[in-house]
Length: 149
Image (cartoon, rainbow, N blue to C red; front, top):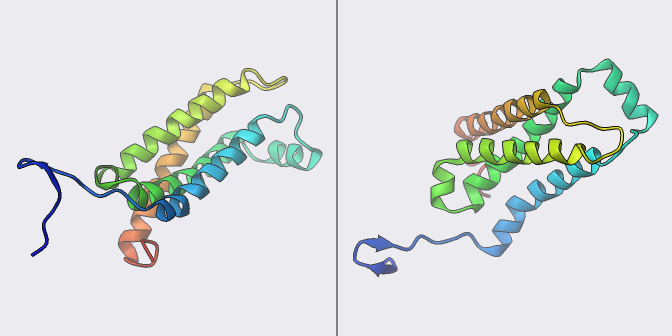
């Protein structure tokens, strides 16, 4: 008979993920967030990037950029953040990515030749939601393939 640890008779202690699991799931989120921050720190983008920006709406780029962040964050919330966060992974992901997007727009206010744009934040939030729901749907559609391995 397995006994679950308790603080009192009415409070159960839920286990937290192992350190290796935390790094495996949250490492890509941190690296990608750092990449976003680095890109936002560039005052004058290289010509190759500038030409792409002229061809594609920057809102579409924000949507794509934060879709990936949303997918990575949802994956981490589901598998390496504890049971409560796992149950509310979409909401936590969208809220976290929206706050990160807000911090990114504020950061750009201090970068020469850059500006913060509230519509970029809307695109960031929509992208995070799209990424989180897409990953959620993919896990539901293919159980075990995208989940823990």
